[in-house]
Length: 179
Image (cartoon, rainbow, N blue to C red; front, side):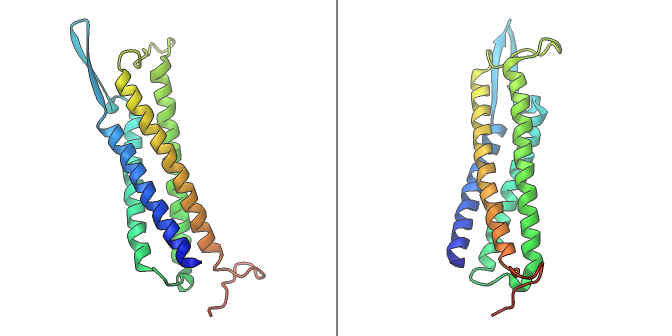
């Protein structure tokens, strides 16, 4: 059973890496130029700070998942019981990465919503009626980011399972005896 959990975790991590890299590429390569009143205007992800933050967060999360994928091949077939501290570290880092990516996606979605609707009180104009391809691509990147968040939530659940199965069900915070 342990081997199938490891294979499932590796497959989910690989899928997460693909979704995070796709998110980063869709954001990083997104720009659109329009001529408005004989002036060329360019919309880019750099104009929205939340998208810049999301680009960095997704890139770091993809690198972290790639590192975990490589490290899991090192422990393939062995129990992490002698290394309970590594299981704790992995659990905490998985949780932190899930929260960071989800928060980054929410911040970028909120900023994108302001770009979509505009805000008269702050004199922010609507962009999406002028830069439709830009907005569509950002929407696709946000969708990929939320799918990656869901995948990372399942990774964090597997990580929690792998950690807490090391402990005795009858004695609080005591490791099971090694067999």
